[in-house]
Image (cartoon, rainbow, N blue to C red; front, side, top):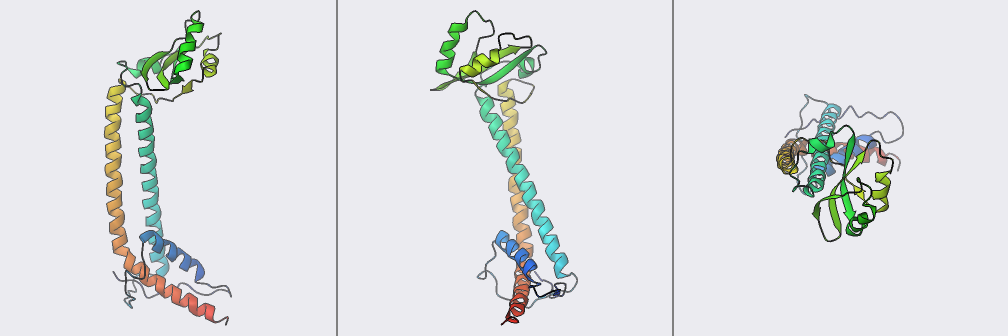
Length: 232
């Protein structure tokens, strides 16, 4: 890869080192690319079709795009994992979730209740809404659903809160939990493929530009050092 020898765009405008900012920019790119002095031999290759400033800006913009896309995909992957983990506790419920999440007058509360809390619900048998429908259990918690009516005068939410109920937000999906989980697995697989593809594109981008960045870095570094020597 050839690089511009024209770094004349970096013109001193005052007694502060005029190359410091661009040297910092290049250093950041060098670190992002993983470039070290051991990787390349210093070269005098040059090309004049593009200015140093334009080249540097193009590389920075592309890097920003790569990082933004990667971060978006990683967030999407984490969010999908979190939903799958939460929904996994309800996978044995053979019901359409939309039938209980889109009701007009009664609202489903998904979550977990300590087993001690589940036992204490027997004390509220006179309240028809003090019922917890267990979907799964582990050593410490029961995972399930209770229902809160719009005209709840007994404040069922407060009752379950007193029993240390921890609510889990389940997005509104259509289908049974098993069907939704299967679809989410496909979504997660697609995200993983996109992350892998992006990683390959990034490696190719680095390969095409790393030598040019290294050459420009050394050019600017030499000019920066020469400017600093003026003060001695």
